[in-house]
Amino acid sequence: MLFKNHQQLIKNGHTDEQRKKRADVLEILTAAVSTVDPYHVVHSLFDDDTLCIQNNRIALSDFTNIYAVGFGKASIGMTQAVCDSITVHKGIAVTTDSERTVNDPVVTTIVGGHPLPTNGSLEGATAILELAQKTTENDLLLVLVSGGGSALLCKPRVSLNDLQQTTTLLLHSGATITEMNTIRKHLSQVKGGQLAHATNATVVSLIISDIVGDPPEFIASGPTCPDSTTYADAKRILNRYGLWEQVPNSVRTVIATGIEGNIPETPKPGDAAFDRVTNYIVANNKRACAAAEEKARDLGYETIVLTTSLTGEAKEVGKYLANRAKAYETHGKQTIFITSGETTVTVSGGGKGGRNQELILGSLPELVDTDMVFASFATDGKDGMSDAAGAIADGNSLQRAKNKHLDRSVFLEENNSYEFFKEIQDALMTGATGTNVMDVQLLLK
Image (cartoon, rainbow, N blue to C red; front, side, top):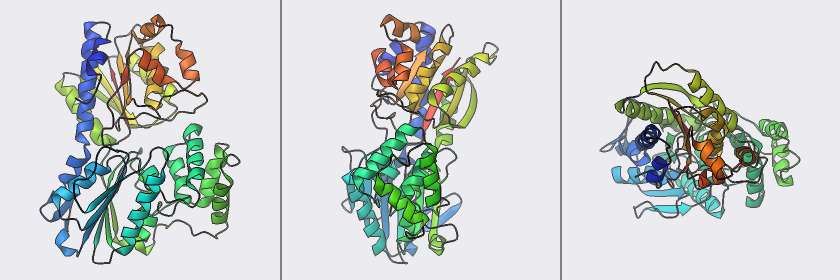
């Protein structure tokens, strides 16, 4: 069962109708996660010694050796699928999961950190870069990319401590993931196409997307993609959020030196190295939403997919979605509104939480005196710096909080959504799911 607190989440419903909707939400979210399971997604691409993907068939027998490197929250499942499908000469998987390894003697599993890189992240990136540099033009390098890869594939031009400080500032600033990854690329020796540039092999990247719009150059900071951004872009972003004077001096030095042309720019479109590179998106939030929609229809709901490109300040987005659903005339039909994407949180308080929990916390007043049930869920099972995957609420949730003397506005001001939903037992608890296709929101009316 995906949700560890499944029974409690259902029990928290105030009426039989609420409890039924809560149970349906959990079932629909389970279906969404299952369809983007990294092992099954990748394993399905292989037919004996042929990689079959998007109407292309790649004969693996054409290569002398096949190497597999994976980094991200789905790296274990993706790499294991490759090893169970074909013979791999050597492989490396960098993961956040300290309890799982790839079950193949030729694959080294390395544990790194997320959202802040660790020494394990540096070790993994160094090992992958060294492997890539040893390949020949007769080899195939399978690169298995998933969300979280920016922190896990980390070979910085500054100290680890300075990179961690910079990452923390960006996480708290409200910067988008593409803005964060623009800066990460220009502090790195492996991101922004530099991994592809380091190898002589044919490169096929299989990518599970965790960014709105599925831009390969920003997913895990695009190590096998040409980079359209520059050092000047990185400086502009830091200035935009008032961080240029706050980041460590080494970060300013690298970016300024790059702007002056004394550090090479990341490889750009048109670079000959990318002639032997192909990047494929193999799973994304659209696939998860399609599975959610199918399961909802099976359960008897009318379905409305509002967007798969949800962005904005989380607490305001939650309020907006609840009001939009309230205003929609369902004509007496049980209806589910589905959205997905990645909102942001501008952190001003010292609490614990994440964008999914803050999104639901922002919506609570709009749910009062309605029959709606609203959930926001991080498909990787980890929302922000908390151990929750998100939160669920209904029209009675705010009253339950008041009964416990919890002031919603105080928790919002402190960015402390985790403690709020922990107190009313409406935090979604799954643990790591092994995949990552951003967030999914379900609103039942």
